[in-house]
Amino acid sequence: MGAITDSRADASKFDEVRKSGDAIDTITAFFGAAVAGVALFLPITFRWTAASSAYRLASLNNSVPRGAAIGVIVAVTAAVMVITFREPLLAWTAALFGAVAMDINHFAGRHVTSADLLTTQNYLDAILAGVLLGALGAAVVRRPVPAIGFAVGAASFFVFGDLAAVLQIAEDPYAVLEAPPRWLISVAVILLIVSTLRNRSQSKETKPPRIAVELPVTPILASMVLALVILAITEWLARQYHHAPDVSHAIEIGMAVAATLIAATAAAMLLPGRDGIGVYLAVSLVAVAEAVTDDPRPGWSIAVLIALTTVGLLIGIRLPSTFIAIVLIVGLAVFALVKSPNDHRYVTAAGSTALALTVGYCCGTARPRYVPSGVLALSALYLPTIITALPHDSAEWPLNGGANHQTLAGRAALALALGSALGLVALHRFRPRRRPKPTQSVDDGPKGLA
Image (tube, rainbow, N blue to C red):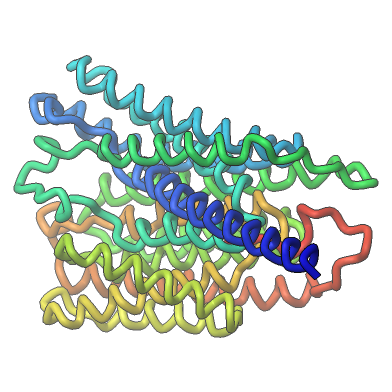
């Protein structure tokens, strides 16, 4: 009887240790994903950047979408490489390397006041963010609780978008903004050191009886197709407006929407099973977010948006439905279409709330079976979109400022959302869901979350 009592006590202690370890890794995943997301979303800048020429700043801004595209490809490649070796410690070490290298890059940027290096440093930051995001995703996505922290960290900062209000930036953001803030990177580094040491004793996963040669390649191809095509079409559309700002370019916008949907379809079909659901949802979410969240929000709202994203994620895990997810996205696109730039701040707050809940719900609903597919879906949230190419300043767009811009952005977002809905219908038809076989690989099993 005493032996049974002792065994139960030991089991209870083991559960407590496991839960505390999961909590640590969850916090680490959140901050690591947040650092990577901010690095892909905002340009790297320092206090001395304000002294740089307008040409250098324009070059830096232009490098952001290109850096994001590179970061997405690197993130998926890192995830593929890590899971191929099936070594848990390798995933944590690679993520730690990405965070430490980002910290060094920012430390050097503070002490090297050369504007010529800004664009190079931004590309380096995006590459390291990709390594951090991909390796960290591979480390935690198959573990339910840390996976939630990873998804919330990536998705909630995508919802919030800009750290300017949090850092109390005035008229010249380049005078004080360092993105990501070095304190945030340092927190991520410390947490990653703790989690790496905590997981160093994990045993290497046994390889499955079959050798899958095709699957590790297809997510990389999918990321390249999605990122490069979207980047090319966005830059092309921006050039059309630059050369002819007085024209509506409706045909060009239609071509850009079609090209984006074709790229999303190609990427979705390259992924195994129905993992492409996350790609369609991400592509439409990016456009809707650009169309909905155009107004500044107070800094304190970041905590509220993170909480709302988490709530949406938990609802998506409990009640997953691709149909509901795309309906929510279409509803947000309609909201962006009818929204006026002069709406009350409560209307803007309602839009931000709905966006946070929708993004979280889509993350909980997608749940790709293959780890790199989940990394691709989350990192795709930071890709540019055709809404980004539309001029926002009425001085640059004389005939189409203010409300006309909002209407056009809403129409483009709605077109992408409806096109994604059709793509999801086709994906469900041509990729029927099959029950996993007893010999199915652990990477294909439904143990992940993204």
